[in-house]
Image 1 (cartoon, rainbow, N blue to C red):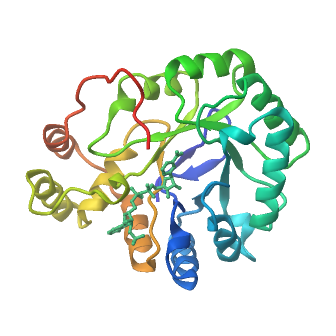
Image 2 (cartoon, rainbow, N blue to C red):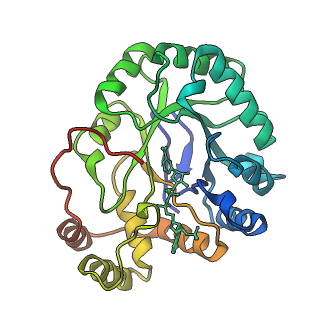
Length: 279
Ligand SMILES: NC(=O)c1ccc[n+]([C@@H]2O[C@H](COP(=O)([O-])OP(=O)(O)OC[C@H]3O[C@@H](n4cnc5c(N)ncnc54)[C@H](OP(=O)(O)O)[C@@H]3O)[C@@H](O)[C@H]2O)c1
């Protein structure tokens, strides 16, 4: 499994992790077993959020007895992201996750509270040892500029953003900005949140051809592509153990120039949109 530093001076984290949005829609034992199978296969970064209903409680069950292995991330919804609200929301997440700390705590998307307030809450949590780092999600460059001005260099661990083969907009500006400032980029919805290229489509066939060359699957090729650049991570979600193992295997795939050129042709970057796309 390829690993890299999470942010400028952050811990080394595997490039592929595990998402947990909507895992509570499946049978609980299956979801727990899938997360554990992912952990066994090296997917140590687990991404959850207070907004994901019962997901934090399922994560708690999956990581019970092995918390120290995990790079555990949760998120505060913008409505709770006042100076005091962020502290209370984090404490509630810690309680649901049955842990004493988060490895990273993120603002789920930019919201109504001034970012200075949210940052003050994050810094208070960090000083108390309840979070080891903090980051952002769905922040475009102008919002990142504001956050950096307020927090100062080295404070923001990551920006979690939409990134899949059909939506590469972050490559225009957000990704280079984060790379310049030593901020990890965590791509979410790497399989298009369930809308992955059909095997019969032209793009699907390109992925299958490359997958055969590397002894992986089309999804494995996608995950390798989405983590090919400095500072990038990805967090596919599955509630099936076999799929978690398949996703982890992609962490060893290194694409060559021929592969990359074929993917670029099949899934072009496209023009820079006016606003950062998000789910
Ligand atoms: N910050 C944000 O605003 C934000 C927004 C969206 C998502 N996220 C995070 O990013 C994570 C991932 O994104 P996502 O949940 O939207 O979707 P995703 O990971 O792009 O896709 C999940 C879908 O792919 C399927 N799948 C996973 N692995 C597979 C495999 N090896 N073979 C076949 N199918 C496979 C899953 O089915 P099964 O589960 O049935 O296997 C599910 O239908 C989320 O769970 C969440 O943690 C963050």
